[in-house]
Amino acid sequence: MLTLAITGAAGRMGQRLIALAGESGIFQVTAALEYAQHPKMGQDAGLTAGMGELGVPITAQPQVKPDVMIDFTTPASTMKWTDYCRENQVPLVVGTTGLTEPEKAKLQAAGEKTAVLIGANMSLGVNLLFNLAAQVAKALDDSYDIEIVESHHRFKKDAPSGTALELARRIVAAKNWPWPAALTHGREGREALRQPKTVGMHAVRAGDIVGIHDVIFSTLGETITLHHTAHTRDTFVRGALHAAQWLAGQKPGFYGMADVLGL
Image (cartoon, rainbow, N blue to C red; front, side, top):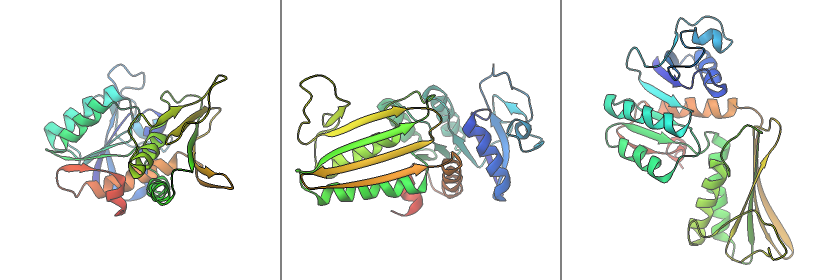
């Protein structure tokens, strides 16, 4: 079995990671990590996750070095765990969104010492969508307008979503348009006509929507829409566990979900 450390263990994603890792038969959770002042510090991680007693308390630091770590937290927390994984050569799977370019560069640099994987979205279906969107963008000429609409729950902090930005990056690269100048974030006003060679970005925040992404390619006479809906956060959890199992056996380097899927 692979030993697994989970950061943000008391959060929604952390709890599901603990529960599904325990059911997998592949992982043994040996560290459930939270910030030092968290109100659930010291509580049994299994009980917190609603799966029964696990015998692993929520702590601020791993007690033993794990085979792999999964991080779904905040950019500042991710940077802290990046330092830990680099220093201890622990493979790191990062699902945190809202990372800045310098923060991504720090993760990439950590790949010199250990295996690091960043997923803008851990869903296997979304990672196929990334490739499909780029292929469609490359195949169509510039008469097709391109819009991305993403919908998430009311509690999501960053906008656009990391998934929407990654879709836009793939499309802009395929079209050889300038990044990020080709992006248009929403529209308003009397003079808000669509500009050519741009990707429109629109963020919806409502209720408990897990994640919906639409990529629209439309010209005079027809529209092509690529659509993905995540029905449950377990979609991302299972993808992250799949990535962690793969990453645990890799050499130091900087990886993405495309590497996991062989795309």
